[in-house]
Length: 256
Image (cartoon, rainbow, N blue to C red; front, side, top):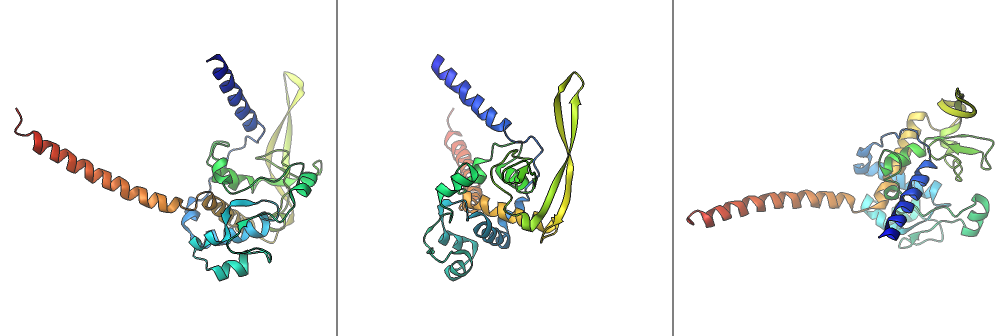
């Protein structure tokens, strides 16, 4: 029992440490209506293939599963496949894992279920985390990649969408602790646009919402079907409970 409690405390400490390693800024709310917007999901799939699949795999997702997004196999082949891939293949990264580890210090994680795995990060949902994270990059020349992130400080991944968003800097104020001059707190005051991107701020936020919607859908493609089925199951259980209650009353009405 003692060993079990010790293991549990160590696990909790690891989770707390992992959470503490990431930024503590409030998470923005992901627009959930994007999850039922087929056009947004299709656009998100295109962004994922063009910007994410170069380094990150989605090894549990096959290209032809995107037929659930009202895409034909011909559209998938023409718009979402690399030349060497087949429509029945899983979505593998084009980057060699050894090169990735050499360049970034670690192999980029698989993104098949990233939206679900981030469900416990911060005070929001997994989509909230991803939506905020992908909109929180700023230029930091002290880092090897030249980029940093408010949600995930010292992140190894560079800002692959910088051409869309443009280059931004972070306005940070240093505040010294009056009781301990050696301690300095960094307060985030906002961003400053250094160079513009190809998209406006609103267009970039919309594109990120589409990308996160696709990542969320990819984590559980049958989610919408499961929710619809769940509604009918609850209706059935409610009707069955009513019938069972009335039947029970009919059986026992003459019993003294």
